[in-house]
Amino acid sequence: MQSANLILTLKALHIAFMVTWFAGLFYLPRLFIYHATTSDQISLDRFVVMERRLFIIMTIGAALTAIFGIWLLSIRQDLLAAGWFQIKLALLLLMAIYHLRCLSWIKRLRSGNMPADTKWLRWFNEIPTLFLFLIIFLAVLKPQMFG
Image 1 (cartoon, rainbow, N blue to C red):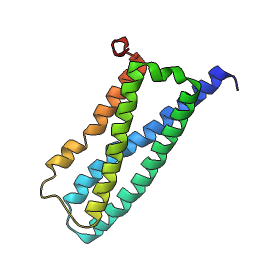
Image 2: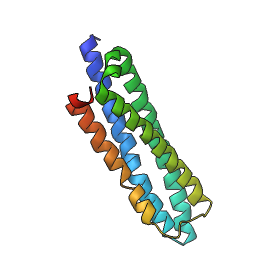
Image 3: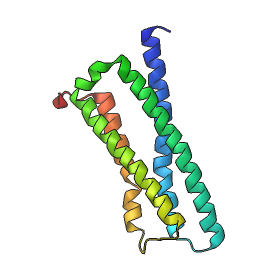
Image 4: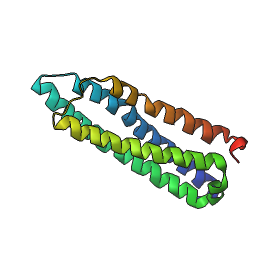
């Protein structure tokens, strides 16, 4: 495959798996809210299964996003010098931390340790939206103000 075609193919795969990852990041915290506000055992058990399965799917999406992103970066190492790209990498690191925080919520809720109030979870649910907008704007606009 020619270099330009390879890069476009890798970008397409990177974006497709990023969508999978974000779908999980958008929906999993919503499941946490539902889980935390339910009380019947059948629903509690169902949320445990749904959360575990969704976490697996979104982790696969995250891993494949990273693999194709690293592959692209191996071809376009010059991106590492761009300020906008460095900010994007920092955001990706924060997203990975968020991803792991979701795992801690899965474990907490599975053990029956429910929050007294879901207000924090409702805010937590909105964080991926910020990541998505910032990363997309950086990747598309490549603002020169960041070097």
